[in-house]
Image (tube, rainbow, N blue to C red; front, side, top):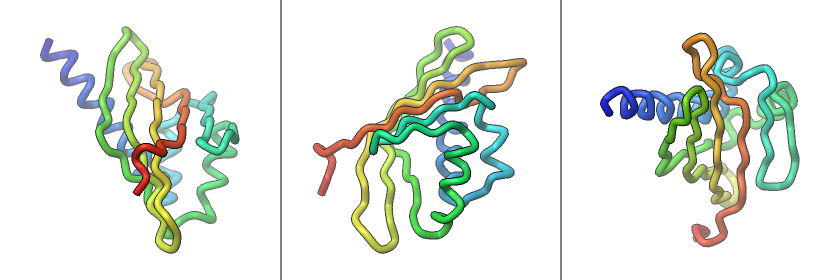
Length: 126
């Protein structure tokens, strides 16, 4: 049980670091956390690959934070799933309240995100 708990905690920390790096537009830190075939389906319906998503973050640096809340992980062999709330806290406009699921794959001992799906969470709106 300890190994599973440790792996789950590792995934949650890794997951949060993706949003921290995305908020800071820290691409040197973000790039190795995402698999080359990473796909992001946004709450708006837009779907982007890794390069498209990272490029879309560049003009957002300093304008908002991605704040993860209540993230929890589950393991399925070499696949990990993290789900929770991710709020987009803008400096100059309303916060966007979302829920997300991010899927990770373990390759050669390293977890990398392969997919993210984000949906609006209107029940959490203020």
